Amino acid sequence: MESSLMVVGQMAFLSVLNKDYYIVVSTRFTTPVVTTTAVLRYSNSAGPVSGPPPGGPTIQVDWSLNQARSIRTNLTASGPRPNPQGSYHYGLINTTKTIRLANSAGLVNGKQRYAVNSVSFLQPDTPLKLADYFQIGGVFRVGSISDYPNGGGIYLDTSVLGTDYRAFIEIVFENYEDIVQSWHLDGYSFFVVGMDGGLWSTASRNQYNLRDAIARCTVQVYPKSWTAIYVPLDNVGMWNLRSEFWARQYLGQQLYVRVYTASTSLRDEFPIPKNCSSLRQGQWAAYSTPLKGKKKFHDTFS
Ligand SMILES: [Cu+2]
Image (cartoon, rainbow, N blue to C red; front, side, top):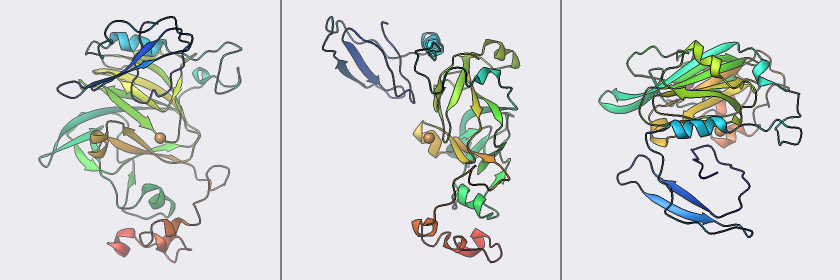
């Protein structure tokens, strides 16, 4: 291996190295590009690094794309795997829903915002999980974001996507912009089944890796490209799906996925912490004791 590109969220890299390697970190969105370099040395190294460190990734993403696709799970009997061999084949499970998410940038009321499927996320004053648990009205609406891009203008809302517990879903991240995107999903690890340049279509599924993809919780989407993931929704809750580009996340490029079950069994979800009211005194203390009629959070506190 001559060199390997690391992207945000690809935090672990295991390789058997028998010579010294440069570790290079360089910025992508600054002028000038800032670079810092280290040398990884092994006691049995066959030789020091030589020559200049490799240049950072350019807009030529093919090389990086091919490398990302080539990183696979070792399925052989002695390979390290998250589950015993033969017990779970993600590629054999039918997806029950497809969610297509497109990021975008634009102005709302003269201010820079970022959006997913045209919705720029507005942070509610009540944490969504608590609003859901205590059924506090007026905080969010399930379905306040479409599950496919509709090309409309950007608007503000507290976007919550409705999904069902134990569904097995396909999410396609569509990046029409010309910078790389980095998406993170809380509460899950997912299988990265495909990524390619251009526009995603149902025919893109023909090139999915349904055999030995790797499990991740953050994934890159190359400029003017798409990335598809399979997610087994085995974790009840209200989970954040967000850009790891901090400014974009803060200015709206995030949403929540509500993984819902009507069951209130402790097998499906841990109970709310007993010290919930003391964690943030005042804001939802009224809801930490048995409810006497449902009061709206906004009516009570603001
Ligand atoms: Cu997380």
